[in-house]
Image (cartoon, rainbow, N blue to C red):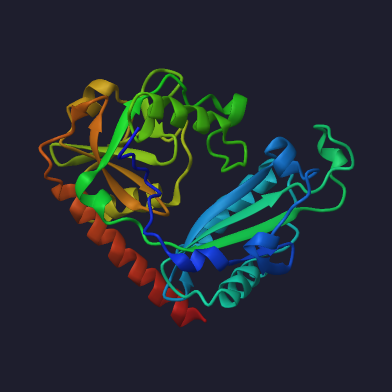
Length: 310
């Protein structure tokens, strides 16, 4: 398939060919960054991760990301091995080693570590966690703001909390990978996933919003990643007199929406052009545009507040 896009489309940057990566305290060239084949993350997808962005030397919404990260690790009895200050020190050292200051995307990954035998039980991971930090020079592709993302509703659903709670930002992403493959095979850019009851939930990579008659709708949050950007958008709407609802709704309401957009740390707010081949709205996206400006202002405020606190 040609002309395929994702919400993580970025401008090409040759500097990324020689980035340095943090692996358990060592910062090495990407070609030398390695973990064991016995690592729990490689073997089982047993780990948690966070995606963060660096703007003007500040990790945007750092505390919100760390709240989610530490809560997730605690929920699966995964010892981080360091406190928040330690994580920040590792991030700072990695950014410094790469001479990175702004428009940087980071994937921070923690696994249960190297196992003594190639089996499932967590007790076989005995040498402590594995922490890896990948940072890239990364600016979202501007074309997505005008073109928008094409979604296809996929049969893969976001499951019930007692199967694998979607609130975990875990390394076990096969559910989302399958949804992504189904969307690609349907000729779309990303998959729109329903919840176990058939209500619209999220995409394979991002949280999902629609706009109807000036009001913003998103899912209840019961079956989706508790996205930092998702919550910021909800909070911004409430603070700026934009009606916002966390509710169950079906594809019927999504198809008939005036606007739709995705949220995520990388792309912030990415417009949706069509769902299942049906155009969304008439191409004018005033509410999405307003939210994007409010979000940019919020990032600027966060940068200023964190800089002042240093």
